[in-house]
Image (cartoon, rainbow, N blue to C red; front, side, top):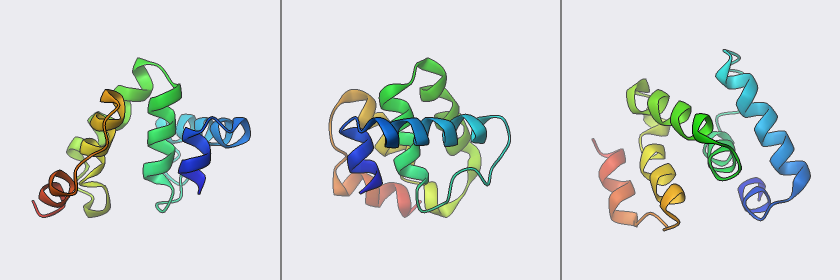
Length: 95
């Protein structure tokens, strides 16, 4: 629901997600609950600028965290305005 509301431009959710994202980018890794990470990143990418796109992409590409393996694919689809296919996400999580 958090992601849905944020991507639908709910101001309170977008503001909260952007605040979490900014705190996370300056080193507060506890700023984003792991269960909300993909939602916060998606909202930051949609409503932020180039920095919001590049920071999570570079971090997630090299993080090696199993829970985030599919996030670069999801983020790239969000930037392109297309939904990720189940196949592309499954391939990413099985690597």
